[in-house]
Image (cartoon, rainbow, N blue to C red; front, side):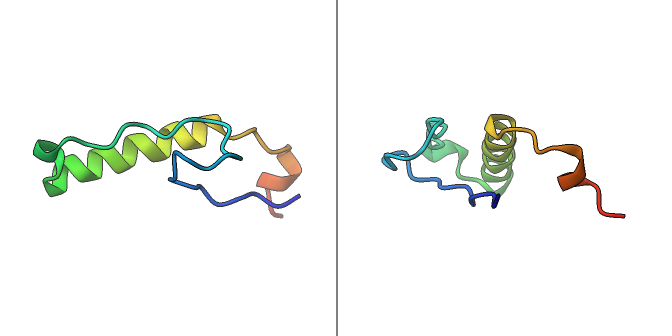
Length: 59
């Protein structure tokens, strides 16, 4: 079973979780943008189903 790549498009009909709101113009500084991306990725990671242990561990 393959894992789909994150789709940042909030209009994607197949998306199961809504995209976080876009940052406001004052948050577009490098630090603000980095924080936004970190929060977005964390939310996306948390919305993914947890893979079985044998998919995560490679001997």
